[in-house]
Image (cartoon, rainbow, N blue to C red; front, top):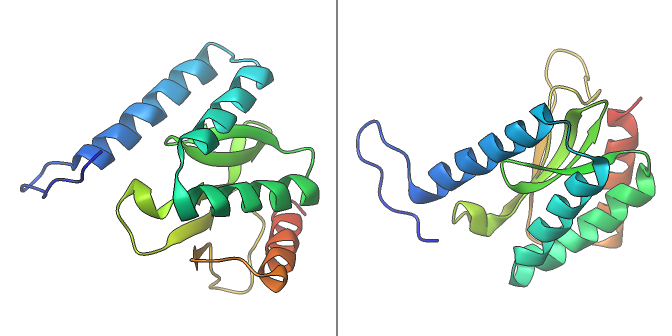
Length: 145
C-alpha cells in the first residue's frame, strides 16, 4: 500500500489502514475474541511482512515469547503485539508500515519501564545482534515487573 501525501487535516492511506486494523481489533475485543484467534491475527501479521521487516519481527517474536511466555499474542493497529491482562505491553512497528527508515520496538504505558522522571519507551531497530536480543529480553522482563 502506497503512502500518499497528506492534505491538511487528512490521513495517508497507511494511517487509514492502521486505524481500520485497530477498529477491527477493538471489535474483536468487544466480542471477546478467543486467545487462539488473537494468536492467529499475530501470526497472520507476521506472515504478511516482507524482507527485513519479516526477519526482525520473527526474531523479536522469538525473543519476546522466550522472555515472557505468558504474554498474550495479538495485534495492535495491525502490528505484532504482546499483551498482559488485555493491555498491550510491547509491539513491533515495521519500517514498511509507514515507509520509515527503521522499524520500532515500542512499549505502551502498561510497561513498567519507569526510570526517574524520564525514560525511553521505543527503540529504532535496523538489525538485531545477540547483545540487542539480550537487552530486549531484559526490557520485556522489566516491563512486566
